[in-house]
Image (cartoon, rainbow, N blue to C red; front, side, top):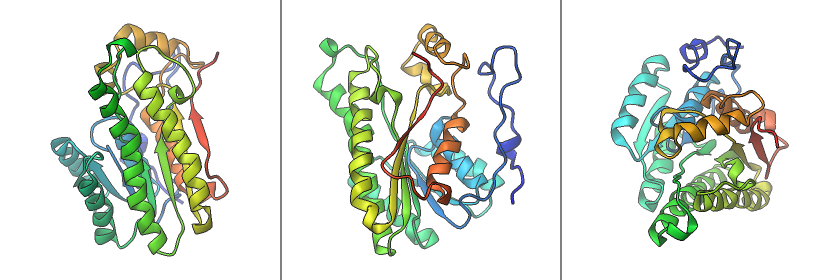
Length: 279
């Protein structure tokens, strides 16, 4: 049904392999999203968003990428366009700006004629004790992570309903929506909000045949993670995982692609933990 793409055959990043083993490799695409138009927010860089973009392209989708960082967005557009000609489009988007959000979703429809899947990946973290946290720090994390998810979902759903219904929204939550971690009160509150928002929106959209689900990764390693978490803490968190390592971003992306696909036709309002962490 599909052949391995360049992304599917690439080796995993160094330092993330299972100790004593060669580590997993991304599976080949199987056409799960053939014919669908997918919008992914915060898709520049080397994290979960860009991995989701590649996986959706591997699965046959046309993909519109949004990100507030225009230079990195241009770089990933150039890389992906070489591998997937005519199936990648980018639109700068700050999810805290309602005008940007409308331009992203409207632009996807203008470019490809419809919008079938929205992946809300944009989020902002930090490490700050509650007693030291400012109002601005709290508000900024919630505005990007929770309210940004709301803004993008609202805009996408209006298009999906106007198309006659059907479609899927996949939100990027976090296991911190369930678990406690010091220094993460603002981020954990925002991600718990994403989970609740997912469940409520799923009920509202069920009559339209639109599914709304979320993934909750525990620890997915990428170059930007060190900006908010130090090496020692990262090593400690990885040691708590059953596999003794962080997830590769593509391992989260495969679950996102499943939830976006027709294989998940009876799943809505669910939060899928992408984690091997044990108590």
